Length: 310
Ligand code: RIB
Picture 1 (cartoon, rainbow, N blue to C red):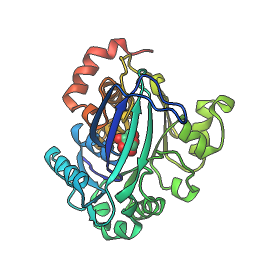
Picture 2 (cartoon, rainbow, N blue to C red):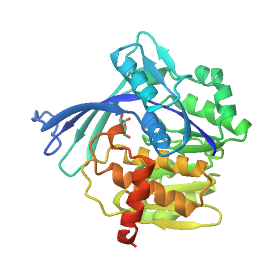
Picture 3 (cartoon, helix red, strand yellow):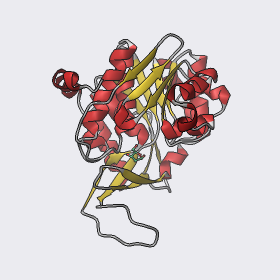
């Protein structure tokens, strides 16, 4: 099994459920409030770890109560965070999340210590990249740090999985180094400066492949996902589930994909596994509390495969 290194953000999520999102200037009363661990990097690392991957997670935490909780939580999970940074004078990352009755969310991220995961730190942990088989990245740490990881990983010929979330523009030189690019519709549109409704899903993937990415996955929410590389085009439909909270569905997909890729499965199996993982995730509240274990996915796939929308 290949070794997975996730380098990215960790947040404490402060979640309020609401009937519907407030308008500007409006004060509304929430229906519930709770706090859980989140952050795109951490969610992906926890997902890959719970789903059987051999995972190391490098993040940056503040020396505050949230940072201490996070460190304890990851250690209890059995996740290796031994190369992570703890910094003074800046709070750990937080995210304020509203979830409405349809399970949709609005998120405000306060990066805090995640901004201190600098490219200087990346060069200090070069050996972690050299020791891994693949690195998994998102966009909640400084862009220069993402670039530094990609430079080092490509020097050592390691696989790079990049999830361009939150959406932003990315230089072509960086995209050329990416083995697996995972984007939702908004992220694909920002990267290509095209609209899916104008050119279609496959055409937008083709634009990304033309930029030099090896494999592109376009996630389509409750429509599943579309995969394309030089040889294959695969459409994996979503599973029919009762969604209560979509937070971390994309992260769970990415972590599950990394775990299954590290077991060298074929693309159809990898994508089905990741689709099942995110289907389970949306049936539960919160980011990390909703990430399933490997056994749950096997059971879910046995039970639900015939219900898979074709
Ligand atoms: O993708 C979901 C995550 O986005 C949340 O856990 C939150 O922390 C933000 O980073």
